[in-house]
Amino acid sequence: MGLLDEKVVLVVGGTTGVGAGVARAAAREGAVVVVSGRRVEPGEALVGELQAAGAEAAYVQGDVGDPASARAMVQQVIERFGRTDCLVNSAGLTSRGTLLDTTPELFDQHVAVNLRGPFFTMQAAVADMVRRGAPGTIVNVISSSELGGQPYLAPYVAAKAGLAGLTRNVAHAHRWDRIRINGLDIGWTQTEGEDATQRQFHGAGDDWVERANNSLPMGKLGQVDEIADFVVFLLSARSGVVTGSVIDWDQNVAGCHD
Image 1: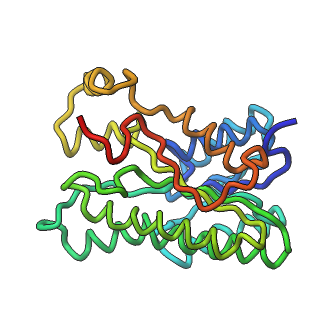
Image 2: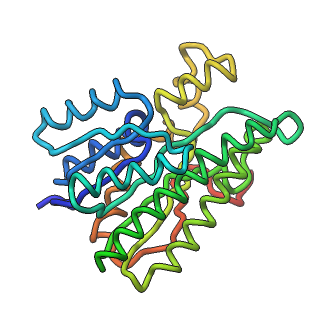
């Protein structure tokens, strides 16, 4: 018996990075997995990988930054599989901006992807759960930066902090519907997207991962498979009654200083 046997799991932003890791972990635990994202090629490639391993999986194209598309992704899952049992919001925009150089356009992009999109995917998923009178689980992949973050992440921090508050609000609002909503404040994580970000914005070379690992208390960056296993735990009944928690998933302790 897997932790998510026969559960229909939608992973928004599931084509690469943490989202793809969650899709793989959910499939191993018996879930029907739907991955969504803008890019068709990696989405279909991941679905093919999951199907080859024996899982039932599908790809839904969509742009979480567009509210209509965000809601439509959930609706397509319902139309194909009859329901959405679990939702993971793992899409994220990490482009840089400080308070002084962030344009209104950049700010709006961060809000659209990092806050507004999860709002409307949760709206659609929770509406389906309430309509069916069925329990469900949601995990929002947030960021430890929502607690303050770096100066060059001002619009990102603003949006992710909003998502942390929204996670608690929706969890409180729907606890009597037996819908559990939790969040993960993940720290610095080794992904394809982080590699691109380090090279584009910070002039990193091929040795940046090794240098980063050497600078961290546990001797390594956060790993996608470890995060994915924890997300699956929160989606599953194994995590019991836990709801409204925004969990620090990092090796630096918030509020502590050397």
